[in-house]
Length: 625
Image 1 (cartoon, rainbow, N blue to C red):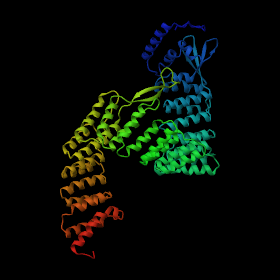
Image 2: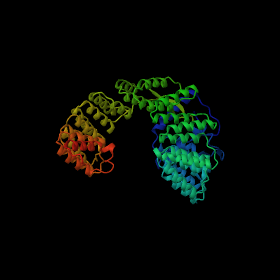
Image 3: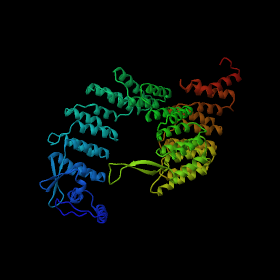
Image 4: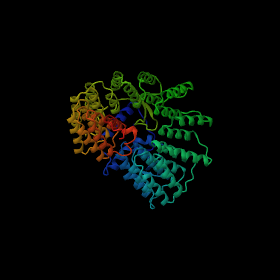
């Protein structure tokens, strides 16, 4: 395309247009980075007259074509990298907010003015947040909030900033923006309160924020605010999600009718609380209220049954969805596969469901789907099918659909197939079900060698080596256990308490008493605090070698470090002194029982010691004792 410099229309040749496009792309790659020195030159090249046809919907001519009014959103969307956006904000947008207009020289005879209105300011803040430029977004907001600024930001600009902060990992700035609104005498509205509750997770944080907004900002809640606070409660864990019911009953007392979103959020709270029956009753109440089951309600019901391990209810719900011809998405399939992974003997059914998903025209599997199928095979101790599925993942047989935005037109997303490669969780699941240490060693080597690839790099973690050490324990292979510990140190991985505990238990199964003692000492030197599983492993190693004196010392060490003994601890202590004579046995048991607390004296924990003591007194004829 050639432009003659005037306001006349220009002609475009198809063949020359292609070559000109290629030339422009090659020149754009050779352009220097947007620094403080060449900012005007780069902008002049990028936004000069050859792009008039693309800029026509954003700009208008002034002074007989001598100057153009360029949209600031057009400049932002033309910036390709985060660094270019930050430079554009510092060099053009911030001065524009102070001066009203910022002259940008695009050629010798033409200049452009950057004009920012209050509506455009809100769009700029929202776009900067979506591009993860949080620091630049806060700069623009605070510059527009100054008294000498030509454009004063309003409630919409603050709402957009709060919403983007709530979606990012810098949620701590949300309350500070709310306080700044109060300084500028901007009263928050329902959109502000709804965005604020997106930044909190759990019922405790939501309750404290609710009290603060009610007392300090005179919040008058409506259905949207109630839905937001119940949804924030559903992001908690365990009993922390129970606060959602408090807000639900409070909403009913206020005369506000719950909507479909209210029921779905409340059902998600019950999923976190593992209240399967409550979820099913809420689903029935939702239908009685005139709301048909939606994708969210089906997903919550399936997740609740799967978390409870009730595979019968999960399968019946899934069958009901098919009978009602409801749309089954990836989340529904994942919930069903999660329930199967918690029940042994469901590996074949899980593999059939995976093939069913792959045949669907719209619903595609994701990494959670494949890992759930692997977990089902591991639960059923089916190593062959798990290994075969992992190899299929490595070969790229499974693809997922992802909505991406093209570089040429970032407004209209298009669907693109992405190959699903195994992650570290996939390898760890297969490692946990390996039949022998050689298979575990081959898997670890495959993970270590993946560093040479450009994509699909999977680095072994502490969980990977812990699973491999557990395989050595089952196979009673102490040499391979030492080999795995050496490999972890060669990878620069510092062993944690789980790795040390697995190695100690592998030593106990191989009758390596001294190795278990030495590992416990090494943990104390490296300041890795042992737990009850660690001490139980060392005690198990001592039991097999008949070292009951060392076991009593280990028990005293546990009590000094405030580590509560378990039923396994007392049972192994009882077995270690079984061969002693009755007088020595009574003496040892009475000394041990004097050191334990009320918790350990319960029958379900300290039963083995009391049983052995009563039996020893009976054999000695001490009936009164």
